[in-house]
Length: 333
Length: 172
Image (cartoon, rainbow over all chains, first blue to last red; front, side, top):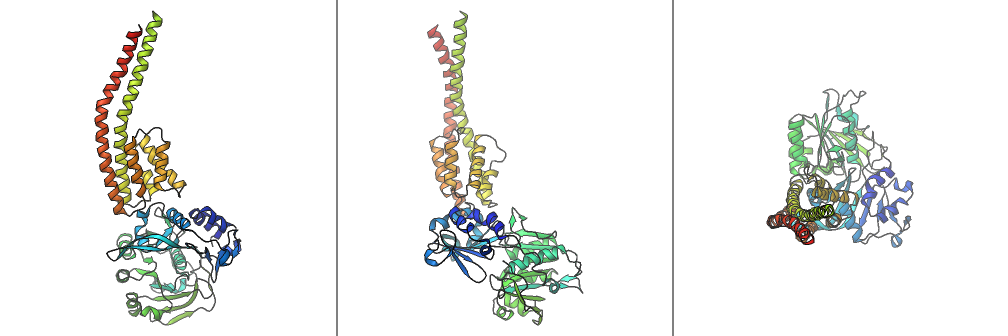
């Protein structure tokens, strides 16, 4: 696991105003090690979210109660936003319309503020009032327990797999490691490396800098960075001839159509979706149809019951449980 | 006799130099405005077509140019990269103020200041509009600078040589 101190020093502190960075630097490393999110809201206490609790920080840089906690100002948020979008709002137009930015290192920053709506479409966000910095960590081998279930040894192919969990349960981290392991190959499981096309719409999985992945994804991954999923999947299939295409957080009608097209083109799909159980997915528009039609061969249910990345159950194409985990497998960020 | 001759030559050379350097300022201004227009045009492409973030776009827009205008864009880019909390307007104004090589007059300085106020803070459509506006205004200033250049370059050169000769004649 990449050291949290390294992540904060390299990617997060340079984005924060010096006085906030210094507050965080004074906190004990043990406490920082469990931080998964940093939430900053105007006139509200600065919050560090760990697996199961929120920590407020005093001006002197120690854990405290709400009355003594450091409260972020409008100026703090303005400055953080300016630095994060590199003074270039136009370069982050599509992301801002969806309420997030991805900063170097693949850390996603959720934004809330006032939406500027034109013709019923959110054009951009102004007067940013809340930020949620989600710390991304690559955890080598966290997908190892899943790997045997996504490989079809008989037909020498990769199953179509859907990772299912609510937010903050380690979907992206596990998907990233799954891609890396499939790309590297695994002799024990009888797979040589697989050619993978990755559509990283939010630049979170590969954390590309100028188009080059900054996270190790192995030698056989082609990344289409910041490209809309539906278009990207079809572009990769036509241009790069992958054996597997992967993407994160599907849900729109066009995503579902692209996945169906990929599967019918003979390319395996590995992707993720927000939900709690496989049955909840039936009720979701578009993606519910995919599940009902048994499009996927494997459904992997994740939770944060024993920490983010807890693998709860694995289902086959007929929605029958093929494996139940009772213990925590890995803790992901 | 020799002293007079040497003195006269020095006076003529000095006044000619002053005349030529005043003339070169008039010749340099339209050239720098032309380069500024071409860099801004490239910057517009980097922003509108590829949505390259401002620090990178500013350093790429000089398209191989060298000289004070290219230095102006490179320095602004460096300043924005290293001091990310500076607004584009603050960075641009600071570099403009610090540069001794740029021969821009007040109108183009004011244009750049007002253009940089919205640079980077709007979407691509809005950026395009402000690029079109500054392009139009700079083109007008360039025409005016070229007319002045034609009028003044020859005049200052002749004035330099002639005033040197006149001083020599009066003194001798």
